[in-house]
Structure formats: structure tokens, C-alpha cells
Image (cartoon, rainbow, N blue to C red; front, side):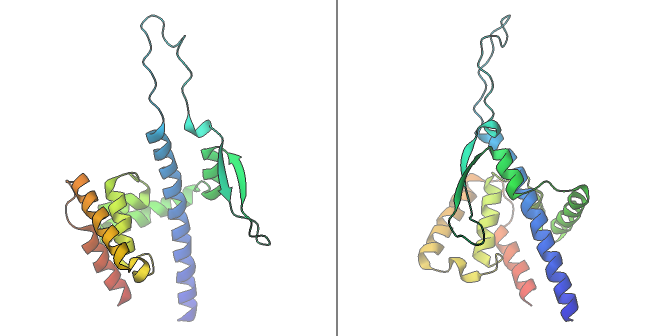
Length: 189
């Protein structure tokens, strides 16, 4: 039983690493598209001759705080583009890893619903549904610690944010909190 447990732990870590990389890479792409300023319209017959070059947020070097080496605890600041930072913290998935992530997210869709599967695929990360999913996961203990947000102040904030997200996303059908609570209960049994 111990050998199987060790094998399963390694597999869960592998799945978490693959999903982390997929979510970060797609989230950074979605954020750069959402934060990019709109391009001004061009004039007829003149075209883009006098317009400014399109600003790509991916090409602008920004300062990023990186952890220090194992021997030192002092973090360092590095200036790099958002794409370089993404490649550093979340390397691209190989083809086999992409296929594996798709199959696991398809299974998650069957058992946990389409919202969870979309989040695991990295789709619509900057949406009210994703925010409510993460909030529900934290409040139901799916992130590993049910008391993570156990104080009264944290519960008040969670309730206020949850109500705000429900108002913003009126087309949500069903409660994400109920689904995650049910899954967490099944996992603990």
C-alpha cells in the first residue's frame, strides 16, 4: 500500500505541475490581451503611415521580484518581459503533457462540472466564474486547509465578494460552492 501511495503522490504532483503551467501560460496571455491599449483607428487612404506602432505589453521589460538562491534568502529583482517571466516560471508543455492535461480536464468536466474543467484548461481565467471558483475552493477546504479563511473577518470578506460575483455573473447556474463542498466531502471519506 505504501508503494501505491508514493506512486499516487508523485502522479498528483505531476498533474498539479502540468495544470499550474497551463493555467499560468494561458492566464498571462489573456491578461496581456485584456490590458493592451486599443489601437487608434487609421485614416482612409493614409493607412498606418502616421500612426504610432502598436504597443505590445509582452515586449516591455518590467521588474520582477525573484526568490534568492537556496543559500541566500535575499530576493533579487530581474528586468525581463512578461513572456520571459512566464517561460521562467511555467515552461511550455510538451505535446504529451498537453494531451494528458486535456484528458484529465475532460475527466474533471465529467465529475466536477464545466466551470472546473474550463479553469483547469486555462480558459476564461479573468472572469467572474473563475474568481468564484477559486473563492469557493478556498472556503470549502479544497486547497488543503479548511481553516485557511476561518476567521470571522475572512468569512465576511468571502461572503461579500461571493455576493458581488453572483451579481456580476447572473447567468451562473447552480452553486459552485455546493459542488466543491460535495467533492471535498467525498475525498475526505
